[in-house]
Image (cartoon, rainbow, N blue to C red; front, side, top):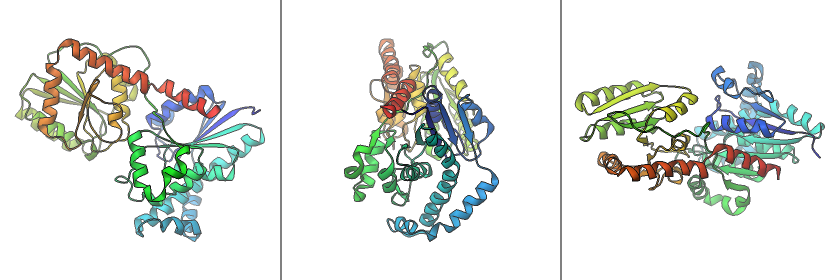
Length: 413
């Protein structure tokens, strides 16, 4: 019987994403030790995962230099050209495969010693890839080298959807599925799209038993619900980066035509288009005095959660052009806030006609205005029912504590 359970996490994104913070939060209760292997990350992220039985391991400049040297030599490998042949020959494809090799080589050099030490002490080793890209390539290569470990990967949208990854067929996905014990897709729609895009490789028929959908969920630290309205505004809230994909300009375009009760739209977050969107919002408020817009900038996730618990929100908005399975919607719904969102990615697996509104991905100004008018016109009883349905959706499907512990118990059994 193994003495200890050791979890090794590979993450190449230089941040600690919210879903991984959540998994680690419950993982430290179920594993004897967790090693988080990553390039150097800002201190603000490392502070979010500080536990006695967690070690954050980042690589030095010398290790980074060796990593790049290996990348230069990667075209000497037969597997490099074999993978390249699965798609269109281009500089981008060559660069993508080279990056997969030199990045994964760096991970392997760091992780190897931890696995060797754990196995020599008769410990049980689990490897989890944060993303279905470099990280999953690492996990698969480790499983090939150490067949006795258990190796898993999380698949989101950017790595596995054809419209977001132009080199989908040249990412060693077949190799990953061959060796990974299980790949967990965050959404059924994302998985369906992946199967369709990879149909020529027969991924579904060959590896279906090793591929599952598992919702990760979000954290709710208390039993509070979003408070009742006490002001004179209909309160809209959005929470996201400010970039082209989030399409905040479409909200502004619709609100220019708003002619109902006073609305206050608050946006949480920052991004590359912040100045441009703020300028559009200023113009909106000059054109339409019935609308007020405010931007909070970037705030810590704990403060976002506090906002949901303490400040009334009528509707949460997400009008993204593309999505995976938005944690921001889960967090809002956990406090009983209905959501209006575009039908992209796996969003419709969260939002439905009982807990909010689904918009076409190419919605018009009138479509969004109709949603706002519809909710405003609902009797108080129906609004309450919708808010209760939002919270119940989170509780039954997207409770991170329940989902994380179920995931780890699946590994142990």
